Length: 78
Figure 1 (cartoon, rainbow, N blue to C red):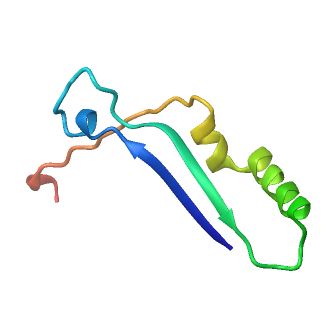
Figure 2: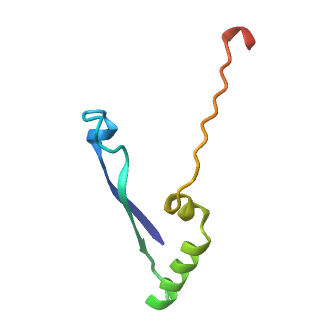
């Protein structure tokens, strides 16, 4: 199986060329390439199951809360 993931990154936002531009992707496309004895329908069923059960898929698909935590250690604490 080969999985290819692609998207158009807005470099104007990412590189801060234009602060009004969005940072990130508007859409991410993934393409499964499978070699095997199954039918297209078999593989479509597997993909649907992955979409329903994958934590990675749902983390990207659904809005999640991001929590940033930092720990600062000075050289004298080592």
